[in-house]
Image 1 (cartoon, rainbow, N blue to C red):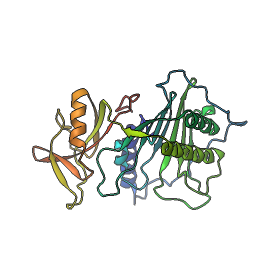
Image 2 (image 1 turned 90 degrees about the horizontal axis):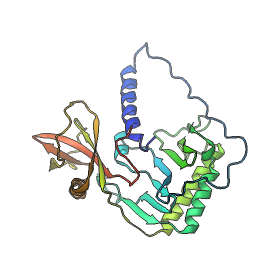
Image 3 (image 1 turned 90 degrees about the vertical axis):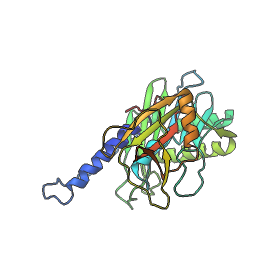
Length: 292
């Protein structure tokens, strides 16, 4: 998942991609196999509503969007596209200025939904049938045009029965016929509309999740900008091309948010002559951070 489990999966994905690349051109490499078919929809119609806890601060819905046409490590620094609490608080990633390289910190917004928008989101979430599922993956259909590097959605529901996950690859593909995909598209439209209806402010959390890369790919010289090492502790000791996750709190987190405010994805951080890449974001109140 791209959620709390996303960092671990993103790193695992990088490892898998490296392994596949190593096997390319080998006569001993196994032939590719077709992905398993998606699980059939549950028998019977989806419920009209959700069985949610009474705690108004409980985040019952998260929607994560996979990287698509960007390097996979960039997903490590992204928040959920949407997170909604039982009490109607909504966190979402707001618009970002269209420049390259983009800002280091994502534009996380927080606002209070109207009762009508919250009820509509609950109804649209129930209509996906996700509460009837455990963990289901709906792959991109192979019966029509295949979209290379297409983004994916992960819809997470946390109700009284526990957690439910619906993962959809290439949700915009016209070849999808699964009714759950159609319902998720309608849920996304409902969330987008609620965002337009809701006054929001920039969210700066009390905890910051940071990923540090030891051997990052250098950016184009025209966008490279070097800064002094910002973290209170040392860089990772490993020299391999990977990311290490850390969480900072309190005054340290506030100082890092200030240091990162005008940094971008071309920024590299200098520690004794060695440049490092940092990906960072505020954690939402319910997130533990660096989970796998």
